[in-house]
Every structure is written in structure tokens, then in C-alpha cells.
Length: 138
Image (cartoon, rainbow, N blue to C red):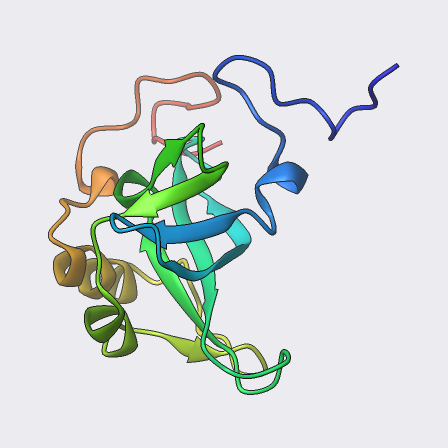
């Protein structure tokens, strides 16, 4: 019998199963793996997949927040695919695991989403969902 956190049927997957999933470019070259996901507490949307990239034997890895919308899941590869080459990724906004920024910071979010060419979903009106009072916060 499957346990919670081990389910990946249909379109839904547990966050714990996303961690460690490979991330490849369109050519199938592995860029890294998902180290974590960052969820917007107010809208319920995934803001970032945090990609671990670079380093050797776990040393010197850099982490890169990628807009969740930048990832497409490829069932055959059992990996997320991004339209980003290694050179672009190496110059992307990133950080050391030992010194993470505030990933909830709007200016950082703007910088990351702009870098990858995505619009910021949080700039849209997201106050229509469950859990929102008149002020837009819980």
C-alpha cells in the first residue's frame, strides 16, 4: 500500500517526490535536479523549483530558483525539461545553499521571472481563491 508522499498518479505529485527529480534541457542533457519547491502561501501556486546545478560530488553546488512555469514534465525521461542552455543557467540569478536569499522577496522574484522571460503571477489579482479575506490575506 502506498504511503502519502509516494503518490504520483495522474497530474498530481507530492512535493517530496519532486525533490531529486532530474532537470534536463531540450536536448536531454541533465542540468541538475530539483532540490526544493517554493510555494506561495497566499495563492497556493508553486513560485519556484529550486534547481541544484554545478559542483562536484555535492561540493560547490549552486542553487537556482526557476519559475515553476519554466518546467515541463517529460514522462519518457522521468524528468523536468527546461528551454535553458547551460551557459544561460550558469549566469542566472542563483545562490549558495549556505547563504540563501529571501525567496519571497518581490524584487528577487521580478529579477528571476524577468531573466527567464515569464510574467510574475503574483502581480495578477490572486485574491479570488479560498483562504482570502477582504484584505487579500488570511
